[in-house]
Image (cartoon, rainbow, N blue to C red; front, top):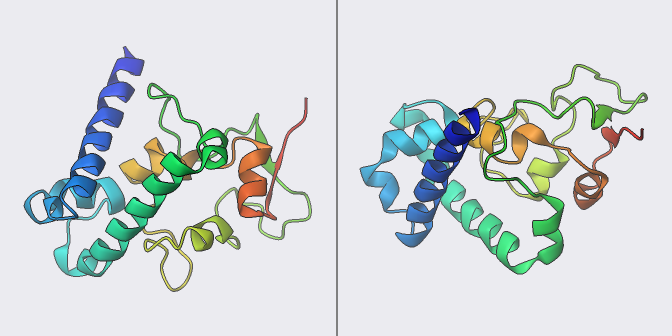
Length: 163
């Protein structure tokens, strides 16, 4: 039953992303509350308006990479019925023993966000999407799941557990 729920949420998110891409971002004007909830868990137009255009641009680039870069697509697989995640699976990955901030968050490392030029990364390197549906249902909340992901972004913080 839970997998059906996760599937339905993910299909709704895919629909909103498809609509965003199909309309060149115009769907954001009509469906703003859904998009704000999807990306930043905040309905404040004044707070979020500066992120709309950069987020649309980044969405196009991400979809382009998923379609055109086979290595990227294979490195970041998510099954459509996968459970949402707020943090990586501790059985698969861990923070390196020599990393100075071992609290399990992105604190001190935003290399993947910077590489993607994520517009939802604040000036003080805090993720504005943290905990949102986007975060939990896509790659942010589950990163890293494998060595290929760590290598893709050159991440110095995480390592994969072996055995």
